[in-house]
Image (cartoon, rainbow over all chains, first blue to last red; front, side):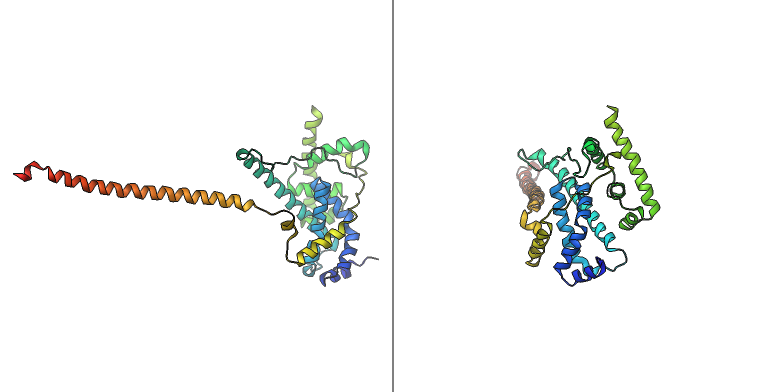
Amino acid sequence: MFDEKQCLQDIARGSEAALERLYNHYSDRVFNTLISYTKSYEDAEELLQDVFVTIYNTASGFQFNSSVSTWVYRIAVNKSLDFLRKKKSKKRFGIFTSLYMKDSAEIKYEPSDFVHPGVELENKENAKLLFQAIDTLVESQKTAYILTQVEGLAQKEVAEIMDKSQKSVESLVKRAKVNLKQELEKYFSE
Amino acid sequence: MGSIEGLERVKAPQDGFQKVQQKLTKQRQGLRPSELQQPNHSWMKVAAVIALVVCSNIWVVTNYLKSDSQTLAESGVYSQVTTDFNLYEND
């Protein structure tokens, strides 16, 4: 039986072996969440390392007010959102510099052909469009949708991760679905 | 939207934890991994813009002061000229 509390206490004391145990327990789940946000295997891999470095650095400050799982997911979500914000501002800055510099290689276009590696083969085309549409959602709707619908977490757990009430998570998911439907209609009406 | 039904969980990279350990080692050495991988020179662009603004302001202010002192000098010469050729005072 994996004792999360003991594991985290060991990490707080600087044990890398305990960190490895936590990594083995959570890495797959965290990696899947990260890949849903970043839409890139490489970026998700980089962020996965950052998540566990942050866990190692901040374990001593964990108060056990929430479950370890909630805390780990919260770090992963925050890292993902930070990554997307930085990417967005880099893209904006790239457009600006490209006006002045001919050889600017700053603009990196989104890989529009991203398909989540876990999607079944017959659904790949539709899933590609769905992940493009998820990108258009605002942060809170995106997080609520990814965690409940893609990762399959319970609304209660998502509410704890997002530090919101269960009701508001429910309404965020509802609004996300409406927005996604509108966005997807653009593709299918053509 | 049903396309993600039956979505399978992807395995995290196999050597992932070794990379975490590498980052922790670098951190202990006092170097941030992101700094090691790619030096960030974006501050130079900001510094260049600030320098440009400061220089152009200095240029404008010095030009303004120069033209001001020239006007003063010229107006002094002019008053001398008028007194020299004042016909009424010579009488």
